[in-house]
Image 1 (tube, rainbow, N blue to C red):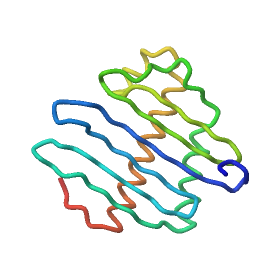
Image 2 (cartoon, helix red, strand yellow):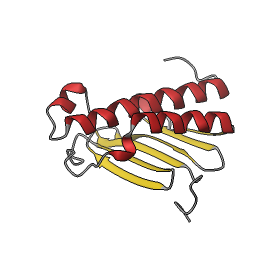
Image 3 (cartoon, rainbow, N blue to C red):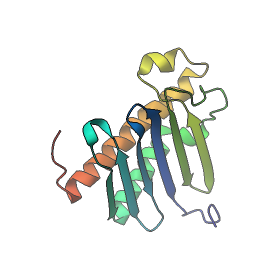
Length: 150
């Protein structure tokens, strides 16, 4: 089961909302065996769901763990973060170093939203980590699949 081992690692991020184009979301997950699952559903102008699965090697997983550790997000608590609302929701779940966190909050448009929140320090950690994780995932997917540029 999750969290039994100090070496266990799992990460999942989701952001999405229900809009005029239906359920639009971005989700990615890293499993302990190195499988990265990525899904992006934007129905804008009839775009199709993009789904990708790739295996990343141990060095990539170690780099990902380093990003998470360096962010210190595992010390945070989402109890005073703004809850999901009509703007949308974000979820982050991480199992790392024998700890398990699961955070849920609304979509964050900019750092202004962070500064105005009840826990700007914690939310800032989350905000920057999510930026880093997205960059990591997009770069990984681009190396594996030449995603056509926007």
